[in-house]
Length: 102
Image 1 (cartoon, rainbow, N blue to C red):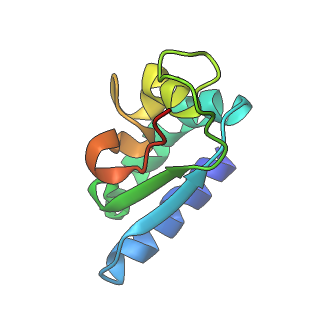
Image 2 (cartoon, rainbow, N blue to C red):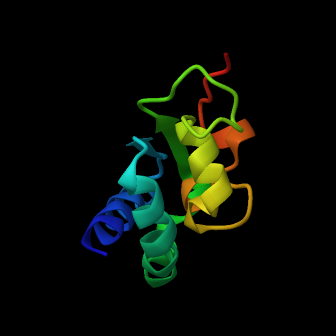
Image 3 (cartoon, helix red, strand yellow):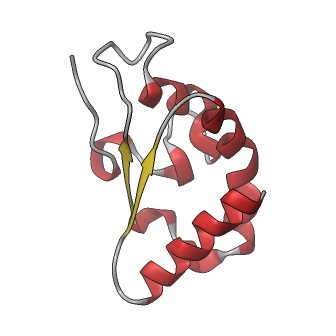
């Protein structure tokens, strides 16, 4: 919960200054942790406005989203904590993340 709280606090600070919050994410155990912990952290920090986030997948593999090795695919399947087929924080892949396509 501490990491999700840190992320949402940093997001709220960036948004409050009139900017975007940029977040780089890796895969592995981080996917499950953020899917579980980010929704309550976002609820507690309404200023973190997920619509102002830009998400990058730092260790994305050049595989289709459906492949179990795809970091972006893993976040989408898990909902990234904010809704089915969305990325972390509710970011949509098309406008708020920079996907890698094989």
